Length: 166
Image (cartoon, rainbow, N blue to C red; front, side, top):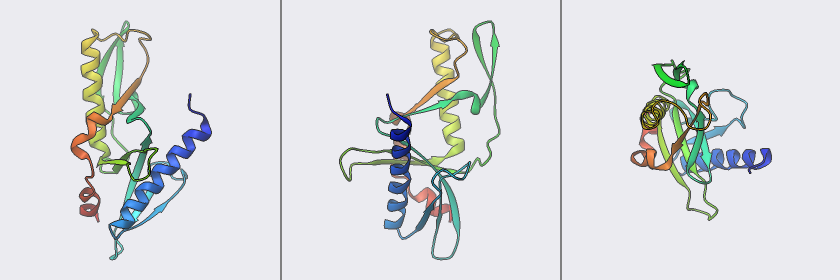
């Protein structure tokens, strides 16, 4: 089981890996060490244009979320019913998912907008609920959902998304 310290180190590693990759691309990135609610770093180009970025880091290629942060969930008995998508604070926020490797230089990056993350999570949750008749097998009222590396493959090394925002 990961500890709070371990989780904090993983988060910090991801933020600095993204900042480093952006610097290699001629951009300046500043991290906020978790002190800003909606994003983890700001990137800027030589003209002064900037873009906020959310970083999510995992060591195993799976990221955990609560589906009710993205979509309305209602219950009919124990059956979960998916409602409307929730408005996002910053729908066009760029999100970089990092798979932090134990081996230096083997890290993997997936870059997409937060609204696309919402689309993927809601679609995955709907498919999963359909496969079990709408009732979660262990705890019917659980809001847990996950995003997997396989869900993000088309966004691998999509660094151009960031440069088009600047």
